[in-house]
Image (cartoon, protein in one colour):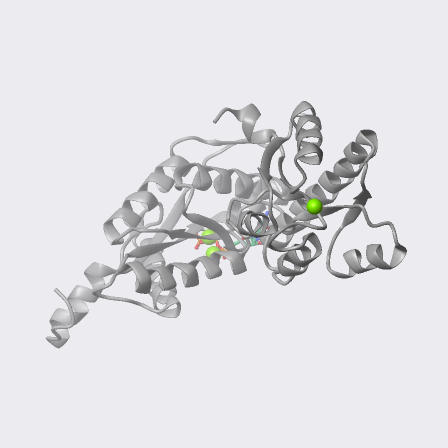
Length: 319
Ligand code: GH3
Ligand code: MG
Ligand code: MG
Ligand code: MG
């Protein structure tokens, strides 16, 4: 898929009348939408409930299967999902009907036969609202300064990996990252410079992580990376990649180049040694503390210490 194709807004048309459908589709294609067409309500609902749904939909009111307003009602029953802007197309012009459409969750309506300029203008309103929705959702789930995930979202990612572990018998890891002597960066170069360093550190972390990993700001100059489908050694390898990405190149700031290092505490939950998120974070935190104590700018795992303590107690819990 090219970048250009990715930017085209996806739109669903659900219309059982062949002539209306043809007219609608040709306009939307001409206006460069990425158009999906269905001819009944059941198919429309299936597409709108899928993970990869278009977020703009033009729904005929009267269709075989499920009617347009019922689709609106079913979609609105899931407010946690990304917003879908739904425009009803109808031959009904009674105010009572239109009010019912809104009550069921439609965003807008257009009466048939429609004026193409009006349709286009109304779709632009829809896109504007979707852009605002994206912006609000981003702000609610991301850290303002660094633009990585918020702490809550990163902790939710751990819960998601825990559920996946039960389902798929997979492993996953966490990395706690703490910038070294960050206070002295603030003290030496000022708080603004500190902010620049935080932003750039977050950018480097995100650059090393895979798309299905989660990078979050844990608090202050600490970050949490949740590493999907990874055992401790894979997680440790990612921590090392991030460490090198941070320490190998100075950070360009308005106060000049600043050399930055970070310390890393790593822990993983595997099917042989499943850990709760609390245990996992505690192990990672202890590992981070050891990395700091050993001189900073390094990554520490948790397995070796557990093995030592287990050898000491003679327990056969694993290995
Ligand atoms: P260590 O190597 O032991 O981690 O030392 P440190 O100086 O990094 O740790 P410490 O906890 O003493 O200091 C963290 C500092 O991070 C203190 C706080 O003012 C600063 N800080 C937290 N949030 C922000 C922020 O958003 N921007 C800036 N510029 N500084 C921040
Ligand atoms: Mg119809
Ligand atoms: Mg700290
Ligand atoms: Mg620190």
